[in-house]
Amino acid sequence: MIDLAQLRREPDVVQAALARRGVSSATVQEILALDVEHRRLLQETEALRAEVKTLSRQVAEAHRARDVERAELLSAQSRALGERERDAGAATDVVGARLREQLLQLPNLPAPEAPDGLDETGNVELRRWWLGMERGASFPTFEDHQRVPHWEVGVDLGILDLESGAKLAGSMFPLFRGDGSRLIRALGAFALDRHRDAYEEIRPPTFALTETMTSTGHLPKSADDMYAIERDDLWAIPTAEVPLTSMRRGEILAPEELPIRLTALTACFRREAGAAGRDTRGVLRVHEFDKVELFNYLLPEQAEGAFQDVLARAEGLLRELGLTYRVLDLCAGDLGTSSARTFDLEVYAPGVDRWLEVSSVSWFRDFQARRANVRYRTESGETAFVHTVNGSALAWPRIWAALVETGRRADGSVELPEVLAPYLGGQRVITRRS
Image (tube, rainbow, N blue to C red; front, side, top):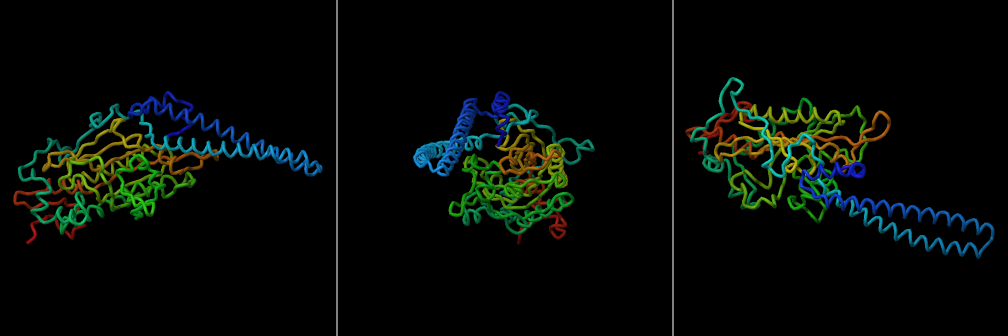
């Protein structure tokens, strides 16, 4: 969540920053009013508590002096004040809960460098990459046999079975078969190996507590897009970012521990509640998918370097796979709830003639750490919140689609990148199953 002290100190600055994300001034003013009321009630409760303590001492003194009448009078006053203190405390809790609820709904302040804009139309394309561009090759053209959508290629080769997936779990739950399944597995192993030099591999639980989901900012704002298991107060994780962010929840880290770099390959679950009718063919938008995530706990001065490192790693994987891609700088209004700055990577898939998002690399500043209460001890001995950076490197269904479409040959087979051969037993080509 945002820093409430900053909101009190610089209300106009915070309000202007949130306005870039479409948050109304009325929302900010309501939070400020709740904060004022909460602090007033706290002071009132504390003052009443102090009076009760004073009266309790006076009652004890009266008893020691054997002044029964005075002791009874003071006891009656103490009981009356005690009732007022309990009522004030209850009111404080109610207002405090409303204040926290409102703060949890607020998005992060966008970085000043994030472009202006209220939706994806305000995103700025920074650069493109394609095979051979360093040698002067022009943007690639694609042959007719590469202009076939991946769901047709998948059915033709027997590597994608959407009907069986729907039979088992409903629509938008794909089922990969044979070499299609092996390709998904190979991509995950390939990416994890590329991150072994600096990132500790984690295999976290696939389910998370409400508190864990809240720490990343997925709750309460995005509850409709998550799969809930109400009976056990658990949620299916939408990304490995969720458990990785909370691994050190509630801890104070030593500065020499930082940065802490973690990576995980997990299944990810998203209801996509607001996506009805959009991109539902093939594997462009699915409820379950595999993804490799990179996550960092950092000192503030380490965050920019980590942001660039995660971005470079995601781009490096795309280059090794030989996929045409572009980098987008997301505008303030298109940032995720927790993000202060995000770069998206999109690959070009010729069969659907679309740019497909395959990675978001985000710097959260201390927004998530404030929710998860992850701090470090400064040189002066005080505590401060760490920064967090994360990114997908990479999410596989759309990569799978782009590889199948880009690699399709005139005879209908699919040629795969050489870097994946070690993970496929040397195989480079997917052909139709006999």
